[in-house]
Length: 79
Image 1 (cartoon, one colour):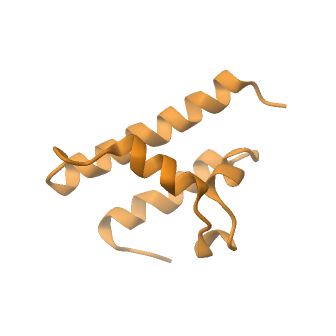
Image 2 (tube, helix red, strand yellow; image 1 turned 60 degrees about the vertical axis):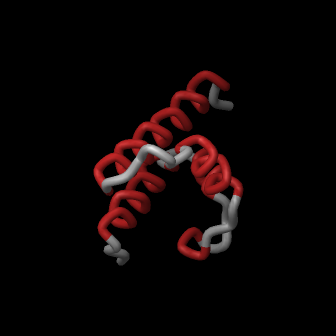
């Protein structure tokens, strides 16, 4: 099992990515990064086969997979 600290570090990494995406998109002043991320982590996502990002994050390579899904979302590009 992975340690809680490692898991927390991955969540913080995703939070930093979401914050950077909000800043680059133009108007981050009223954007609540942590609330958005917390909601998104427990929501079922069709692009993940109706799995929750939180469950994906617990798997090996999960952080990279989630980053790979978030980055194209900023530009509206989906594969």
